[in-house]
Image (cartoon, rainbow, N blue to C red; front, side, top):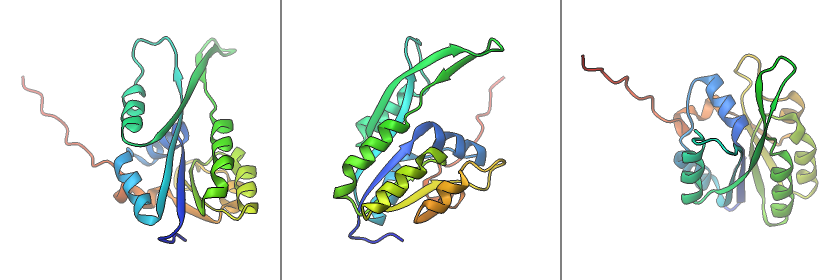
Length: 183
């Protein structure tokens, strides 16, 4: 499904990819991910979308965002909104669907193939619109988790579905050995 001469871009829904990889029990090595898709075509852009909690002294995602930005990813962030649900639990909301959709539609005339790393069914109309513009669309997510992380209608709409589990050995970070604690 990939051709060497394809002008290719990847669009990563950060929260969705993180959740899918965690459900499969591995971490993504973003350097390897970029190299893999650079190998599959002419990678023109690699986008990563995430919401950041404002005001927290330390954000666990900040080092990743900084690394991605420094290593050639187009990082798109926005402040996450914090709220309290009906049960009094602290919740964070930071949907990046519109930003990803706008960027994909803007780039579509300059691309042959778009890879979306998300299983969010809200992206089905985007995939359909990109296809109408003559762009092939691959979606990376997983059906191997319980429950599956990809919406069935998104998987069916895509030209190509790539099972994230099948990429584990290519883009997964090697498991670290547990450190021995000196006593």
